[in-house]
Image (cartoon, rainbow, N blue to C red; front, side, top):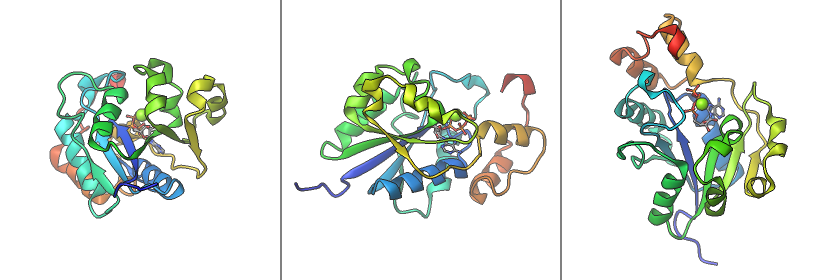
Length: 208
Ligand code: ATP
Ligand code: MG
């Protein structure tokens, strides 16, 4: 069968507040293992399950993501969620990607923490019909619970074998607000952006 130029496309959604090496390594490793032609990072606009008033703005998260992927020719970024007003749902993003890449095979890359919440997603079953869900394990999460996902979801799930990095954006925000260093947890360009723009520094510890 003929393949389109970008035949296998990974989609990495996230708040990326901020983006860190955990995300970048997960995307790169999944791309290698599943032989993806590219991975498109899709920073969320206003995510449905987060207390978004404490987050960096959509433009700042988009810019940090753009800085982070610069230099990797397999990585791209999409504004599909950040340009949309209101809530962003994975299903809407996949629908937009399907329209943009009608011939491609789509892989939605997500961490085990996010997939275990799939019952809170909009129309999870429809999502499974549109893509393969490439799940990366995360240290500190109960990866074995993947077996408990409903069968119709599980049949669309591919579990990436490589162990991932124990880095989270929550921890990074805490560290910045506490004045601790975040060097080596993310590309230096992103760290410098956080510093220059004063992100995460004035934060009420209770509300993150
Ligand atoms: P937060 O702590 O704010 O939730 P996060 O580090 O979990 O941030 P998100 O933007 O919520 O980052 O995650 C986007 C996607 O990347 C999710 O599917 C999440 O599971 C995955 N992910 C985040 N961190 C890692 C990591 N260290 N290794 C593998 N996957 C990750
Ligand atoms: Mg998260």
